[in-house]
Image (cartoon, rainbow, N blue to C red; front, side):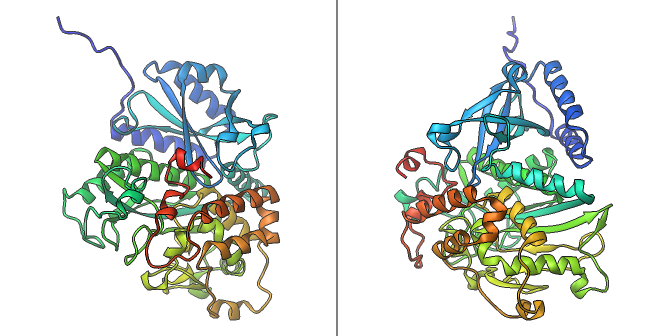
Length: 479
């Protein structure tokens, strides 16, 4: 007699996954009532017997994604009282005040590809709260969510973002963790821009990762190898800033998991190999109100409105102060090398790819500004929150804006200078809060002090080993 399978966990085909995830995304964009969404999700979880666990996600101050799997029955019973030990998370609470709470953001809910996450699981993002239920100061996702909600409540303004995230595909699993043993990374492909034959390892990886992204509602636009050997980029449609930041975290998670399943490593280190282009995370941004793009003006310089230019001028004026947020690791300062299209010039340009801010050619729908000097290992919530606050509220240029735009200045070329600007900035203290300013700078110095002070021409073991995204708990405990 044929034996029945013992388990019947949820597995959804990719086309159905995409429909489900796009519907949830639309609910977020339409700002459906939080109570209604919560009720709908909880009813679904109660009714769907094939779900075993909910993967709950939050992001620490440096930008690492943390995931906990809660048994479905337990979560439904205890959703209002989820706690965790914040002292175990670098950049979160001290040991004496370790208990923190998680508040599930039911609007940020995803059905998952079972061949990547395993069957029977769904995923939701969380906000981190203090024990008394107030927002936790080091939770940048919560800060971004509140800032964008306040902006919309004030006058209906919406902050849109579209990231372009580059990464490398290297031979072998856990290549970053073994870098100190091997002393190098090995490319899986030595092609280049758009060069990948159907079925080769790079193309197979891109196809698989892009399929998973589409299934999770990313609305991909184009997927291709990048300029450097073994480099990739998968672009997805712009969305509201919080949705875009969540998607950045999922993009990197999906890429790492797909690569690992192929026995490879997807790396988002900004400059893991010298002599070739590094990895960037260009952030395209625009503001809209009543579906009208506030950055567009047909008669404006480069078709950009006065508001758009003011947003740029504030970013350029405060570029040094915010540089550590955009480039958060020792390795990131290798990428700010002008020989490889590096955006290290504090200026704006329609076509100079060495400029920190580029103004892509756009129409009424697509007019935007592109901040190119962001590394893919930065905390996406912190990046978008800081760029939004800087563009709208940052100190204005003290000199004539035209003069400042045309004069070439450069971003810091090492993390110590960036930390000095960050720590000394009154604007950063007001924007992020003094607690976050101090904690973040302390974490960055702790990493930097374990690396050679001069970058030199060779990627050093320490800048990989002590990088905040290269998860090695034993090494972190030596900090």
